[in-house]
Image: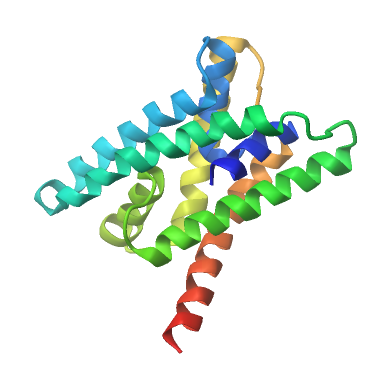
Length: 193
């Protein structure tokens, strides 16, 4: 999943929704995308606890070490793959689509495992199943669009322009949740046979 986020950053067509806000903050302050991702997702973990209260399972605190690895992988993969060619728009599109596929597949696998998820995705799962009683994929798309809007407003306020949000952000917002749902349901079907 860290590679998927990194590819969206490298593609320079706008980052994936989960990394729009961290990217904007990294442009405002001297902090990495991975570090802001960790802080933001820690807040999402606190939101889970607030929503679930006594139903929050103690083992779900394992989201923290998983989040630490995820955040480190974002920064590591940005550093490792920053050499990828992005001088042609077609290459940028390829990296963006590949990033969406990798990120969506990773989220789908976490859904299928039904164990430790990234805090943002588990918060979406809680919102979908407990609060809204809606399909995960649809709630994920709405959540992602909300993250992009927050990033755009933050960017306008502090940078006086929109950075890190372009057509790639929209592509990711509209596809990652659907890819995750499809991967989880198709693999679930295959494993049940």
